[in-house]
Structures are given as C-alpha cells and as structure tokens.
Image (cartoon, rainbow, N blue to C red; front, side, top):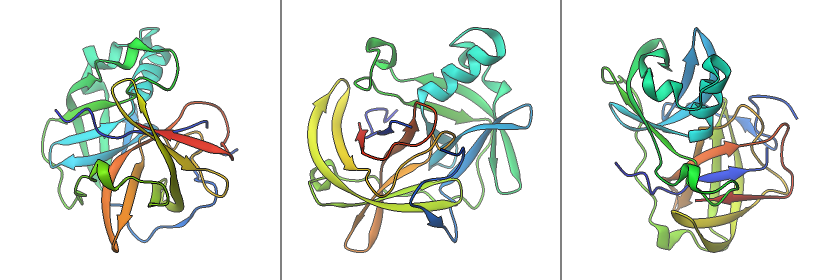
Length: 211
C-alpha cells in the first residue's frame, strides 16, 4: 500500500469549489465518496480497485454517524464510491499509520479505500517523482469539477514523508474539496503528487502544505 504518497494540505468560503479555479473538461481520475447518498469528500483513483483520500474525511464522517472516529473502517461497506454512473461499495478502508501521531499538519492525512469491484473508465495518473517537486514546479489542484494552478514554494521534512509548501495566494482548496488530486505538471504531462485536504471552514488564501 503506497501510503507514503505526497499529500496536499490547505487551511481550508464556499463548499465544493476551488478558489481561483476554472471548469475542468474531465476529471475521471476523481470519484465522490458518499454515505446514504450524501457526498462528504472525494477520492483519487490509484488503481481499478483502489482509491486514495484523506484520513480526516473518514474520521470526521465516522464521528458524524456514530461518534466514533474509526466507524467507517469497521464498516467500510457504509461508504459508496461514485464514478460517473457507477456506484461501488468499499470493501476495506485503512488509515495511514501516522495519522493519529500528530495533532497538526505533520501527520499523514491519508486513507486507502479498497473497492468491492473494479471501476470502469477511470483515469489513473502516474506517480510523481519526489525529486521533481522543487521550488517553482507547476502544480494543478483538481477537485469538484474544477482545476486551479499553483506552484511549489519550498520543501521541508514532515512526519511520514516529504512536505511541499505551495503557493496559495491565487488558488487553493475550500471546504468539501478534501480528497481531490494534487497534480505535478512536468513537460506537459500530469503526475499524481498527493490528495487535497481542507481541514477548516472556508478557503485559505496564503499558503498550503503537502505531504
């Protein structure tokens, strides 16, 4: 399980809308996560039967349902993954081992969802090379039917993996965008660098952090 993947954090105005974003023609690398037909977060397809999302989505929705942070890992079939017209139940959900090790943005806010059956017609982006995530590298935030452009500011080390500080002055993640894709653009090609995480109400307009 490649759970050391880079993770985009944003100190998350309106739900489900990137600020600084524009309409995306297609986001077949993304899925919606639902409980009882209610969308609560998004996820990124990393294989035909696996989706990566944020751990705080799973924890938060679990607490909302049953006052237990791990309830959705105990009952993964509660979660439905929606891709176009296809709806598939989760078979297993695993949170990153370091998620509960830190109260701030230094832990891996990642969750892996294994599906009960394969997705059809989903796009799977190749993984980004960490060495290419250098200051000035072009990034794309992808969520909620929109994309927004940003750049890497600098790199630091964090609990569980590499931390990428990215420019959030003109674009960023809003509440409801968690689980979207952070994409590295290199020589015109797109590579998956992590998942978006909006952990506060509203939208951040200054900076962001990626694991």
